Amino acid sequence: MTQPATAGDRPQYVIGVDYGTLSGRALVVRVSDGAELGSAVHEYSHAVVTDRLPGAATDAPALPPEWALQVPQDYRDVLRHAVPQAVAAARIDPAEVIGIATDFTACTVLPTTADGVPLCELPEWSARPHAWVKLWRHHAAQGQADRINALAAERGESWLPRYGGLISSEWEFAKALQVLEEDPEVYAATERWVEAADWIVWQLCGTYARNACTAGYKGIRQDGEYPSREFLAALNPDFESFVDDKLDQPIGELGSVAGRLTAEASAWTGLPEGIAVAVGNVDAHVSAPAAQATAPGQMVAIMGTSTCHVMSSDVLREVPGMCGVVDGGIIDGLYGYEAGQSGVGDIFGWFTRTGFPADYAAEASRRGLSAHELLTEKAAAQAVGEHGLVALDWHSGNRSVLVDHELSGAVVGQTLATRPEDVYRALLEATAFGTRVILETFRDSGVPVTELIIAGGLAKNRLLMQIYADVTRLPLSVIGSAQGPALGSAIHAAVAAGAYPDVATAATSMGRVERAAFVPDEAGAAAYDPLFEEYLRLHDYFGRGANDVMKRLKALRRKAIAEKAGSVDATDTTTSEQESTEGGEAA
Image 1 (cartoon, helix red, strand yellow):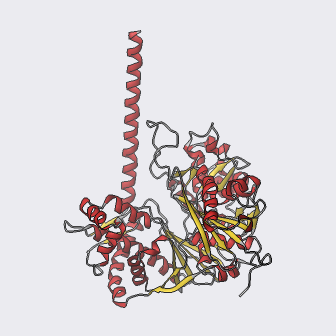
Image 2: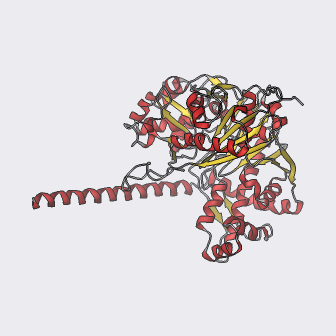
Image 3: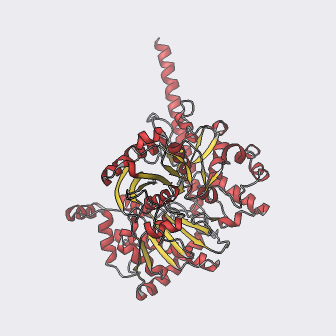
């Protein structure tokens, strides 16, 4: 085993900062063995903006459906609060920290000036929704994504198969095209279209380095090139120079140094000025080294609000519905594959908020249990199939393998006897069925999965883990850290600081995993097979064009909301005109 470079007998530490959907976490890690010594979490003050912009009047127009925005100052506040608190919790000397690295949700993207100032922080743009950060789960650019896909298929663009044949509405190009077409003034003012993963690194070191991971997976960069000017012009003539004018930037390889900590960022974090700042990364992909998943065939499922599946391989294949394959996208020298499910923990959380009756809440309170704990306990007492239900886990759309965010969730088989734990278990199972679809698609495409490793907060739910083992018929390994992305970032920080020669080597010393923590139960696996077949029938019926009722319902919803908003606006205008007239007569 390669030993890390050291400064004599003096211990060395690194900081990993994981930016999630609702909060940021800082983790202090010892370079020599990956020991996690202290952590802290800072919740975003504004969470996810889905209703009205921060500071807007209560009667201001609401954001349209499918919008999800964030506030860049919340990201800086993580550096100001979580990092110093983690260092204090670790009881280390900040002078012994040699590097810091960050990871982020993706594609979370924002428009900035040439020097990195977010447009939403400029007074002239703060009231324009398109000037704010678009979170990964902003799905309002589906129309633009559909046009990108149709045109790419028509032209036979060579990059399209690298993304499973479909580009997501979550990604950089669809979101940028939406800005151009819905607010061309904001688009014109945008000098840089920046992944938040790179923007926060820019804040730390004063250098804009575009990381290879998001550029490849979310920015359609393949073999060193983006979609051509001709392709972009065919989408919209004003989009022709998007790459040249707003997107293109020198690429930073994963684990390399983006720059050095500035004096300003040193004051925020309490860390030594000049330490290494690693190139940014994506929260899912950075977790693979933390789980020691650096060899071909080891798939990591990072399970939280959504699930991202990442895996390295020594073969290049076209996998239908994958989110992308990028050379060196996870580990240098291997092809990194990505797939995902748009809603997992979010779905479970939604159900506990909307489907948890008062008598269940009273029981949970009396017994000191959370809603999830009580529902899991009751669901675990059931035999496979006892609830008589099958669900589709598309409450946030389908990322893989259908790549369609106009799809929606469904539960089939409910009766007047259906109980909350029945639906809850059906939703748990649906997400496992969704993962099995992904695994089988990879297998059938010549990229077999030999090991499934679970990371993320949902690994704590033993019932969910056993369901996944039974449904997939694979032993589940579990990352040996509750803070996988932050640990993965710390590993990259150690490499950037020169403590290890590469990420794979660092992972052997600093990563950790419990192999085969859950193994398939043959009886349970056999019982799930017919349920999975029913899931597949529904999956193909609603997801592959046989019945587009989900899309029609979404269209009807948008129409109703728009008409309601128009009616309210007309009423307000009429009232104002009447008041103005009456005031004039009184005068």
